[in-house]
Image (cartoon, rainbow, N blue to C red; front, top):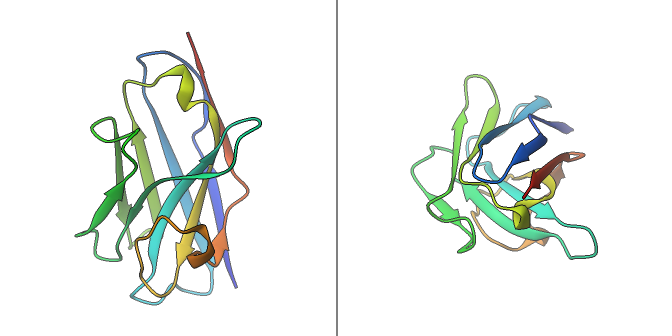
Length: 125
């Protein structure tokens, strides 16, 4: 079984930056595992933010975060990162990392078998 643990959330002012991390432990990822970030704001459904392929050569972003967020990964450390810049109050949410062992960098949550517990990001205006 794979465990995912997010960290790096917190309170930041609008326009600021945060970097989230997602550390994987347990059974080693196979070489096709894609990783994604999703978020859920209070009273809203969980939504796709971004995803990255195993090699890091392919990425995908939600329109709402393009140009502001960057996903990256370090497979030697079994860690995925989400660099968030120019944060807005509407980015306030619990952020979850997720893994898809079939390597699909999709927006569909159903494709992701592994999930972390989430880390809270709050952006004040």
